[in-house]
Image (cartoon, rainbow, N blue to C red):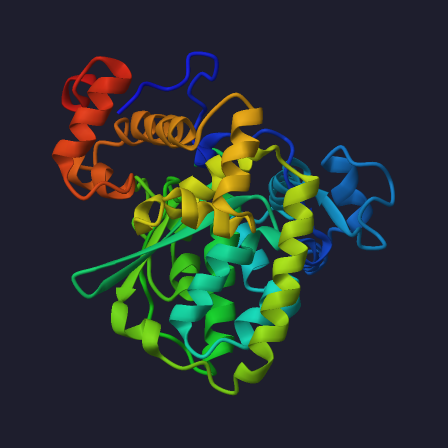
Length: 350
């Protein structure tokens, strides 16, 4: 396997690379304003504390920089004197919060399809992080890779509380609590009962990943009252929005890199599959990468190397786990590739 292109140094993995370019849809901002208002904090006070101009939050903007959204979460927690502000934001998530892709989820036949559409379309609602799913030995593991450091506790809390609340609404019943792991420290243990109330169970804090594990058979549970006949129409509309967003956003190398990171643990990282996800033909994708003075293999190597160096810092992840997360079928293949990239075996690097 070739080394990364010398003119393109390894990038930080998406899950830890806040680049200031992301956006959050206005609808995704609404629960933050509601949670703050419930504790006596107005939109103008929240905007001022976050360094936003007066009137930036009212009327609700079409979108907001992702960095500003994260600041609003932290400022809301401070102004409201609420150590669980993120959980209380997530409790207010509803169908409209997720923008167009919320309607797509409502038209899915089962929860497995709903998770697939989340991984595909969540970026229509926000650029705060990306979802991934893997199924092994009868256990489904949903992970959310934040674009921000683990210390941004309210961000992860809001995401998983929102998934819990919206999942219950979608199912029409209270779902069994997942085995939840969160990367942050959980704050004051005296307040952990609030996690149990909102999430159904106490998470394991200080984990290597933000992850929810549950029986894989739940993926086959039907979505009650789903209008599956609307799915093709809504999915086509979401694809059009995604294509427009992609064209207006990142360059081709970053688009390919982000698609690779989303799909690595699912073993679906091939030129043809990534091209299809970006609504391009394989030949067109190769040409665009060539114009950017790189190749698909070089971008893949860079993404894997950057993620590998990050994963190796997490002691709870074994080399077998890391190989799987990077899309390798065997640990030996990962060992060989890592030595090609860095000149060292992954065990020695760790």
